Length: 149
Length: 252
Figure 1 (spheres, each protein chain N blue to C red):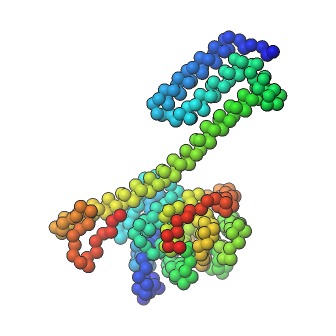
Figure 2 (cartoon, rainbow over the protein chains, first blue to last red):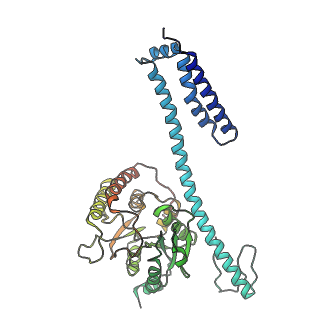
């Protein structure tokens, strides 16, 4: 049977996990962190405790899977958690990047349209031409009116 | 009558010249002056890709200016110009870099070629005519361009071999405008957009044009980065063979 862990070590880990999980909980509650991301991050603190507090569980699990060193499973599981967090981060970053590009382009087009509109308004006022709600000037046939989006 | 005028008066096609620029205050005024003299019938839109200098202040009517609030890179800037062309129903658009490397007197060659060959995309090549006297870039860049070109041919087995796949001097018709307004490659846009056209069976053509050295500003592709650029472009070209391509082709 594997030796039991010392209480100070277990207490330290528990205190750390409690603080970290409460921090994550606050973030999730405040909608500053996604629930799945919060659970994945919490696993990084909870999983080592489960392995350290119950070493026999790690040994049994390693026998069942066929892993020679029991704590390789812990590293493996932690790696999967980190991998999942990274994967989600990269996917979101790509999506945010695409959205940022589209947003910046829209801002550029809208700014240009606004300038065209204000220019149309200034011209119309100086010529005393009424402007419709859609921004078009009521000009006579054959007179080019600015094309707006 | 200049060739420019003869093209626009025989056909009533609307042509937009897209000038993407980043910190090009030294060269933009000269380029716009040249454009107004040598291509007076074409509309011009300058896409300021988040310049920190006075580039935008130097742009004056009749040239229009689209100011991006942040730097998106050449792909994002060009796509903004293409979207402008699509929204306003232009028939053709020509990309002319704001650094003054692309000569406005060569625009008519691109437009004549795109009309005569009914191509969706016409590339202006520095290397097609071995005897031309224009600016031909450094050996390393020429070599890089050749390797990218070979990769494109290898991946797509296209009959038209593109000698200058990194050239930003290009004309697009409504098919290409429609496609690229919707989706445009933001990483290495010039060679990848060619790859997309090949993959979507859009006709691509290449003609020889004269270019000159950049008139001001700094190139976004530095010499020491050329090799890494080449490797990454090759990977992206290979990747474009298996990636899902945009499907929107309104004018196809």
